[in-house]
Image (cartoon, rainbow, N blue to C red):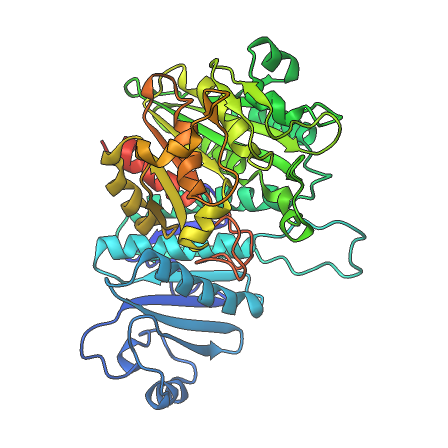
Length: 504
């Protein structure tokens, strides 16, 4: 099991069902057609104050329909919830429903939960279990805090969970959801760390230490090594940093039992602070730019997930870690930079630093010709403008992946939509002084143009999917996550990887 606090038991096992006490019991039923009241849904084991609860269930005006939750207390110390769902409910909606139930239990500080899943439809049962475990993991997350410790120790929500269901195969879903929940929380934690805490050096040091404990190989291409391979696009961004501590971290997962020769490569943008550089951001747009490293956190969380779940194929992760500062050494508009693949770039706007560090990183990542490159970046405001922050944008040089991208977004509840990257959409990147412009100065569809720019640095047209993380930040949270920092990407990508690799 991924978590000793989370356990699974077949619903037919009766050794402890009637004697084991829980602070809360959640029962998930399918909303059957013609259901008129809640009475028939009350558990058979109901004994204490049975008549009053039956009366309450009969009197309530809450309709017994999909998405409804009936709360009642069997005894003073036990909260019960009957949750109704149906096959029409999306994973996104189920995650939100599970979040509401778990938040209700968190408010009353429960320390143990039993989740009874009585659903006959296997797919629906899997989605429901995934939603509740994911919501529980999200609710257990504690924001990084700095300063004096409080006089009284804060309440730590970390309840034991017992899942009961007739289908034994659901135990795998419990394990998987717990692992992915840990990955999402890792992304959230890293993105919330203060910029003067998660500096490039501190980030690299942490990755070096954790790679060892997770069984991952670690390599760091620092500034000197990047100079040797003439990675000018990356170096242009880091040259303003007095610390010169940026670089590319390469993590490698080698499976103990490899099946076939497939290789997955992950790439992530890890700008630990983005001032905009010479084109300095205004204050309102600079606040929160310590989170511009979320893409690298997603890539790291995924390769850690591969190691913990022992995926049967090799995985590499390239994390482009740097800060984008201003100063006398900062790169400037109209500079011409030579990237590691020899392509020259006319600089237009120094706040388009993400595509610069990714250009060299994608080139390096694609040289070994992996079966798929999957990159993540908080890259453009244009993607947010185009699709909002409830979805993220996807771009690929393999149109046959569009269906898998959309379905993985639906199944994971982390919704993603593909955009076109036809050649003519990038005509604005033509330059009179270099092989390509970095971007255009104003207007246009920058999310598409950025993807077209990145594609040009892939070696030998490697299969590639780029995710512009428009929903990495969303006021009020998203789906099962209540914080603005959503940790978006791990669930979607894990689903996509299973769909493209493990399920074939």
